[in-house]
Image 1 (cartoon, helix red, strand yellow):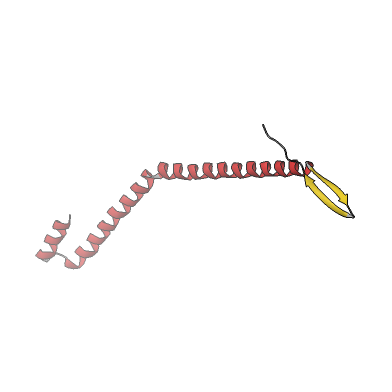
Image 2 (spheres, one colour; image 1 turned 90 degrees about the vertical axis):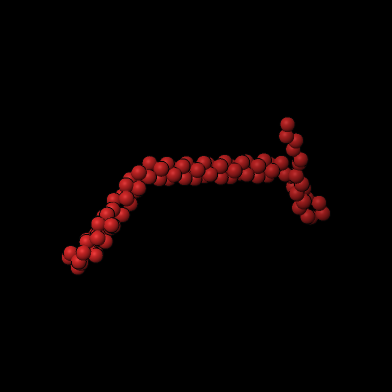
Length: 100
């Protein structure tokens, strides 16, 4: 394609139309390639986005599970503590729990 436009320019046939016509055709080919690449990658892009959402949901569930475990542990620790008053001072002791 470039050779044909170069030959027309060298022959002096409509030189003021050759350059804009070549640029328009080149732009059209580039636009067509960009659209084809975009539509061809649609499935891949969709998969990447879906994987991202799944990973964020998994991370959210893990965080919620960790928070629940921490709350349960803090409740167990507060249940195992006792307070004793000695000489007017309140002392708090904790029982050690064995987990089997």
